[in-house]
Amino acid sequence: MKKRTFTVIVERDPESDWLVGEVAELPGCYTQAPDLPALEKNIQEAIRGYLHVATGNEPLPEFVGTLRVGIAV
Image 1 (cartoon, helix red, strand yellow):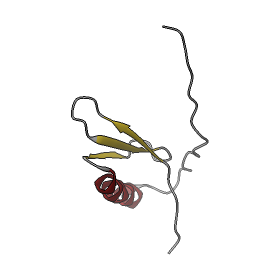
Image 2: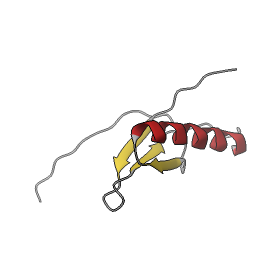
Image 3: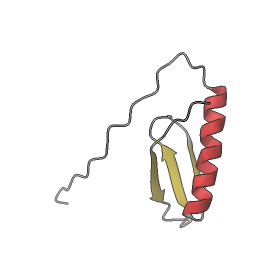
């Protein structure tokens, strides 16, 4: 079985205070949880589900990195 690594972007929802994780390489693949261990478990399940229904015909986007930009407001 081939192992793949995915990039998960984690943010905290200001209303619920839960963590939200989104997989950069899989558009629309995201989940939430109250803490990081639960988020990791949930995102693994979300990735498996996403890949299970993916057609496999389209190449996945490649995560390049993040960029923080400051502006005066």
